[in-house]
Image (cartoon, rainbow, N blue to C red; front, side):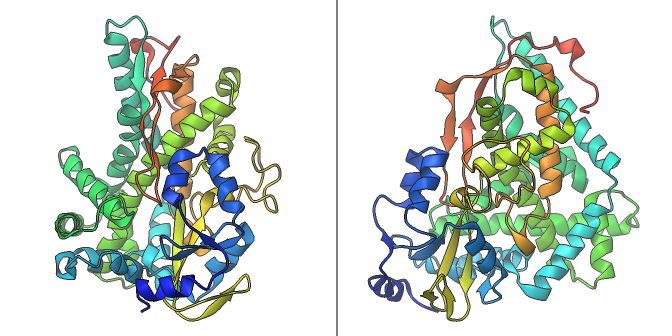
Length: 442
C-alpha cells in the first residue's frame, strides 16, 4: 500500500493539481452551481494535493470508472492511512462490521449482498409501502403542526430540520425494521456516531475510535438480539428485518454478514435521507412556486424530488481505490491511489443533462449520481424518493403559503463527503388548523 509521503512525491510530477483553497473550503464558501463550476474548471480529472487523491468531474468518466473492476469499493486502506495516530485495536468491532457491508464489496460478493437486501424490499407491495410511509408522515406532521398552532406566537413557525427532516427517516426505518419505539433513540445515536466517523466528520483519534467502536459493537449486539427474537417467533412478522433473514437463509448468508447489511441500511438510510430532505426543501422553495406545489400530484412530486437531488446532492463525493495500475483519461493511476467522484459537477455535465444548471421538474431519464451510479446505486433510492415526495406533497397541502426564512437557514457541510442543514426556519402561513391535520398522504 502506498504511503501518503509516496503519494505526495508522485503528486509533484502531476501537471493538474489543486492547492488552497481546499475542496471543503470551496464547498462551504460557494453555492452549488459555483462549486460545480470551480471543480469543472480544473478538468474532468485532477489531483487534489491536500487530500492526496484524484477527482473526477465528468459523468461519462465517472461511469467508466465505476465499471472498472480494478477500482474497488473496499476503502479500508484509505481510512487507515488517514488515522496514523490511531491504534487499530481500538476499532476491532468497527472494521469487521463495516468491511462486510455491501458498500465495501465488489463483484459477486457485492451482488450477493445487494440481492438479499433488494429481494426483501421488493417483497413489499407498493400499497404497503405507501401506507407505512403515509402513517409515519401523518403522525409526525400532525404533531408538528398542532404544536406550532398551539403556541401564542402570532405567526406559526417551525424549524424543518430538527422537527421533520431529522425525525421522519428514522421513524420510517424503525417501522420497516420493526424496532420498538422505546429502543429507537439509542440506536439512532449510534448511527450518527458511525456516520460521522465513516464520513470524516469526526477527528481520527483514539478517543473517537473507541467511541465509534463501542457504537459498532452495540449495533451488532442489538441486531443480533433482534434477529434471534424474529427466529424464535418463526419469522412470521412482515417487517423488513424478517424478510431479510428469510432472504439471507435462502442464499446461505451467515449471521454476521447479515447484521452488517442490516446495520448499513439502517445507518445510511437515516442520516443521508435526513440531509437530502433538507437540501430538497430548499430547492423546492427556490425553484417552484406556491401554485405549482399545490398542483403537483405524487408522480410529479417524485420527478421534482429527483431533480432537487440532482442539483443539490447531500452526498458530495463518493470514491474508489485502485487495486492495480490503470489509466484514466490518459493519466496513470497507481495501485493504492484513490479516485473521488464529485457529484455536483457530474450531475451538471452538459454532455448528459440538457441545460444542466436549470431546474427542470419534468426532466426525463434523470440518471444523476445523487444516490450513486451503476451497480452501487443506493438500494434504498426508490423508497427514499417516495418518502420525500409524499412528505412534500402532504406538507405543502397543509401549509400552502409556507415560506422559508432565508436569513435563518444554516447549512452544515460537516465533512467533505456529506452535507446537510442545521436549521431551516419555515413560516407556515395559512395552514390548516390542527383539528384538520391528518388523513392520507396521497
